[in-house]
Amino acid sequence: MKDDRDDVLPGRRRFLRCMAWAGAGTLWLVKGGVAHAGMLATGAAAADATFGFVQISDSHIGFHQAPNPDPVASLRQSIALVNAQPRRPDFIVHTGDLSHLSKPEQFDTVAELLKEAKTGHVFYLPGEHDVIGDDGKAFFTRFGGGAGGNGWYNFDHHGVHFVALVNVRHLQAGGLGYLGSEQFAWLKQDLAGISASTPVVVFAHMPMWSLYPAWGWGTQDSAQALSLLRRFGSVTVLNGHIHQIQQKVEGTITFHTARSTAYPQPAPGTGPAPGPLKNLPAGRLHDYIGVRDVRHARGSQVLAVTEQSLG
Amino acid sequence: MRWNSILLAGPFALALAAHAATPAASTKAAPGYQVGIRNFHFMPAKLVVPAGGTVTWINHDEEPHVVTSVGDRFKNSPALDTNDHYSATFAQPGTYTYFCSIHPQMVGTIVVR
Image (cartoon, rainbow over all chains, first blue to last red; front, top):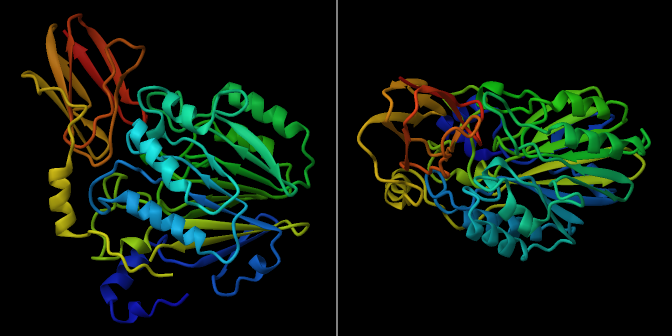
């Protein structure tokens, strides 16, 4: 999607070039584990998709500062964007950091807002902001903790196997995201009965690869989990946490991090620390936040991942 | 798709944010020793205090942080939002390692002599 505003805003164009992750409307076709960038307008894979779902992430309800003092409004607008899609998503997954400070009223706000979403079901998994002080009790009470009560769970949908992992609990000093041996054992057992030709989609909050460990952007024991996934022909890993789009391909495993519905963070290593990217061009916040649409075509092992900004 | 509504941005948002801080988690800043939290670092990362000294952490980041004792050797802070304070008094000599439970790459040490 061409942005003709670039022609009159050289400053913004420079800014976008620095922030290669930014921009709206990129279509990602995932074929055999390799992501191909295309234009949103083509929509080729979307047309013959058997089903689609939407990922939203990092709503940070309770955040109240620049560049977005009203993340309730931007989450509401994200839901409206989903509801305006020509085809209703089968489900929505929220990949964590619903709240900013794990407060009950922040969780309740998210739950209330997502009741407005036109979809079959909403899946949730926690981010580190959702488990502060109570190890996730308030979160899991509202949004479920999986059959085993530990927060992780699985489900199957139209021949695709979905796994939701929790990598934000029991974090250790000096460490990164953490899955733990109990979750690994569960994942091993879960995947053991799945054929290698089954497409697998993994959700987790923190990136499942060492995206930028100096800023905590990784999961310290993810390699163990990924070793269980390498035999599958098509694995798509969807994360939140870093509030920007980043992709990586490792064999048949493709990793995607999502935008936030609240505020962007800097590209890895640009600036002294992660955190809200405050100095956005005036009025352009909506170009940096949004939702992700994923469509699956049965039999072709194609997942089309489409980014939509609010801008 | 474009949206017509306009979110606050720029200087106005900054001004608003300055007034919007809600120090719900703060305790009154105690006299004594301070550790600043800025850009996802405890500063200083290592602080030496005498036995009985009170250490106060102040979060200057927009992100919340949680002061968490390794091995539960002192009481953990609640979530510290921007400009929130938290204090702990260290009666016994020793080396106390702590980290941020939601950004575990952030590690600090209090040495009590």
